[in-house]
Every structure is written in structure tokens, then in C-alpha cells.
Image (cartoon, rainbow, N blue to C red; front, side, top):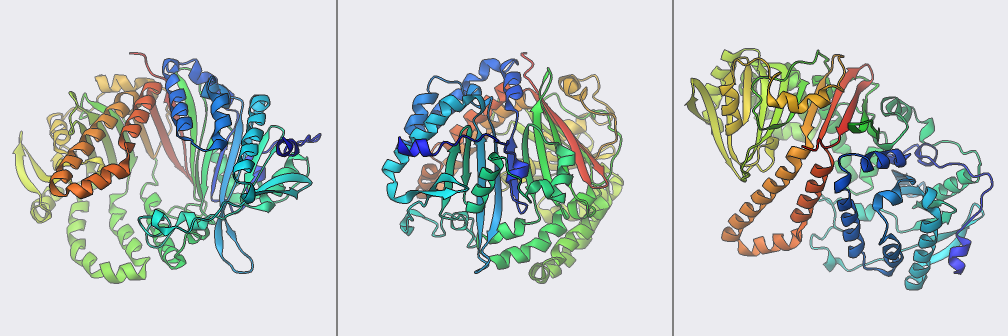
Length: 593
């Protein structure tokens, strides 16, 4: 037990680690899990408590899949413990950031993480030590002790695997276009346990920083001194579960994966497309019944809104749910969207990339008149709903986009002119004209419509686009101005009581319990149908794909089902302000119906 004993340090003036004082200022992704106890208690005392055992089943599946000796000690200790009980007193943080070699200018990805075991330290600490002991026995040549900040730390250099045959794609299991995450990570790691803290870093300087903080020393720099971090924290707060992406050094981190030319070329296009987003983040804390959790969200854009964000930069009063929502509705969202700005936006994206401008400039000139005619009839309000019809089939999921028709005649005239050229055939439906197109399996998840038939029609002051069944249902309800007394409105009413009376830019609601399980079953049906079709066309390719999936679709279905049993309604609202967008959201417990 020599290794275990030297990894434990008694620090008299120990200070708490936080993502603010640990993560370097060039951090791109920051995650922290603080004060998890209240959230764990909230779930364990909710209507979801009867389903939490499935969380432990997921833990068991994970441990069963771990075959190396390093995991054996964890299996033995966690066998009789509930996962939520273990994590309830813990806190943790992780930062991902680019690291630039000052001599070669080569860029790699750095990772720093810490776990505070809290009340679980007496049980979990020795488990970590035992795991390290076993790891040293198995991989002693790759692990050695070294001193950092007067603490004995493990330095681990995993053996390199030069067998390229293990990678069927020939690029390090990468992302395509010559980019590889695996090649971007350094091949050296530092690990240590200091009392209740388990520390991990790919950088010696970062390990030293954490050890200095624990020892009570003052440290300079870090996210706490970043103006961008302070700005996004104004939106999301500093408590609970936090996930933040900061973009100042995102380009550098992407270059670490290879092909810096592609990154430099894509960067202006991404900014033109989305706008200059300095940071975006979300936090989640325990809620009060019936809320399981409350959320705060933020998109930090202190330089002003451009790109896609500019098109959504308008607040307006919340409106009642529309009358065209069907009884099978399980999700609804509404946002302000400046359709008049779409063409200038598309042009700015194309012109931001010289290569794209050369390739698409002439084609854009030919389609621009057609797009302008279609957009001319659209207003600035967009609503999206999703439905689930029963009994479940592969076509049970419906999606409907409803755009305000500022000039219904202009839009119908444009569709009559350009629709046939787009492969859309007109047909009559109860006095309305629907332009339909059979998507088959070609579009997959395009606009959430999957396969089947897509329809476009004008009804009243709305332009409806989506699965044909949803479009037809909406047309039947034209003239019904509000769904206030409908079953749909009543199902979402518990969530709407949380929403503010302020003007907002967008809002979203979904009945997780009613939709996720069904969506998983429908997705499985669609996958099986596609595989059967592929087996007829190319049996060898179908077999390869089935082997590659390895039952992943079934695992995803099981996870979605577990989520649907633990959560009821989920919703959020987003408001535009001078520095970006701020939002709040809620996760409600199952109703028990």
C-alpha cells in the first residue's frame, strides 16, 4: 500500500476547489457540479422516486462493461450502493482548453478535472487508492511518481498503439476532413488524491495550480478573472450544475484536431451564420414541488447581435396557445423570426467564405428570385409543434411549422409558380390547397419530419408546413383562435404558471413523459424499416451497419424510456437584452396520472 499512502496529503489550510479558480482563462468548455445534495433529495422525494432504481441499473450496466482490473475495486464497493446516494455529497468540475507549445506553436487539447468526494471520502478514497495500486501492478512501466508542489503525484503515459488496422476509417477515429480528436490529446496525465479531492490534469502547471489552491495559497488568473466568464455567469449564476462554452479560444482548440486551414476558413462563416457569441451556458438547481429543477440560461453577445441571433432579436407579449394545436400535441414552441432578413443573412454567410462565394454565388443568383417570392408572403412569427398519434406506427410522430402569413396571396402565388419545380404537387383539401412531396427515407430527420409525406398550405393568416397529417389537422382548425379550453392547454397549464408575464423572444414546452418513450419506439420502428429496406438492396452493407450499431438503438430507447418515467413537463423561455439572451426554465415531476 506504499502508493496509496503517499497519495494522501493532510492540508491544514485547505481551500475549496471551484471551476472558477481551477480552469485556465483560455478554457473553451467548463462544467461544474456543485451542491448536488438538494437536487438528489428532490428527485428521491418526487413522483419519480419509484423509477430511480433504473438509474442504478444503468450504473450496473456500466460497471459490467468495465473489464480491466482498475475497475474491480469500484464494482465491489458500488454493488450495494445507490448511485444517487454516492453522488449526493460530491462536487466536481472539468475544463477543456487548447494548449499552445511556445517553441513549436503546436496545439493540443488540455483537460483538467477534480472531484470532491465529500461525505463519501472515507469509503471512496480508499477505493481510489486500491484502483491505483492495481493499475500500477498492471501498467507499472507507464506510471511513475513525481513531486509537484511538494506532493507525490502519479504521472501516467499510456503506451502508444501504432496499429492502424484497428481504425477502419484510417484517420485515428477522427471527425473527417483529416481532423482527429484522438491525435489532439496529449499522451501524458497527472493524477493524485489529496484527502477528499481527486485531481486529474493533462498539464503539470494545472495540477500544480490545484494543489496550491488546496494548500490555501493565492493563485492568479483563471476563469474568475475572465470578462466573458463574468458576463455569462450574470445569466446562469454560480450554483448547481453548470455547463458553459466560451468561444474566445474555440478556434485554437479546433486547430488542435488538425487542418488549421479549414478552421481559419470556416470561422468567419460560422460568425456570419450565428453571430459573434462570446459564451453560452446553462445551469440547473433543485426546484420546489412540483418542479424537480429550475434552469437559468444565457447567450452572451456583448458586441451586439448579428447573424441568426439578429433575426430572433425581438421580444413580444406571450400569446395564448393557437387553436390549430391537435389533441395529440406533446410539444410546442414559439419564436420571433425576421423573415425579411433571411435573404441578406444567406448572402452574408455565402460571402463570408471566398470559396463558397465562387461556388454558390451564381447558383444563388438563380434561386434568389424564387426565395424572395416565397419569403415575401411570410411574417415574423414562427410556431412549431410536435404530436404523437396512437396506436404507434413508424409514422406516428408529426411535426408542424406554422409561419405568420403577412401576405397569404403572395405566398400561394409563389407556391403555384415554384412548387412544381421543387417536386411539390398541389391537391385540394376541404377548400384549401396543399402542396405535397413524398420524402420517403431521403430526408431522415430534416426539420424533424423524418420520412413520409410533407405538406405546405395556407390557412387563415398562417402558413403550415410539416407532415401532411399535421397540416391537414391544422387546416381543419382554421378559425379557432385559441386553445385555452382544450386538453392541450390543460396539459401544459402547470408549466405555464411558472412563466413570466414579461415580453419574450421565444419559449418552448414539451411533455417529456408523453413523448420520449413513444419517440424512442417510433425511432426503433423507423430504424428497423430502413434496415429491412437496406437488406434487400445491399445485404452486406446492412450486416456491417448492424454490427457497427451493436444494439446502440436499443440502449438509446431504454435511456429515453427511463427519462420519460422520471420527468413530466419541461419548458423554458428566452428574452433578448442588450448583451444577448437570458432565459429560465423548469423541469416538473411526473403527474402520476
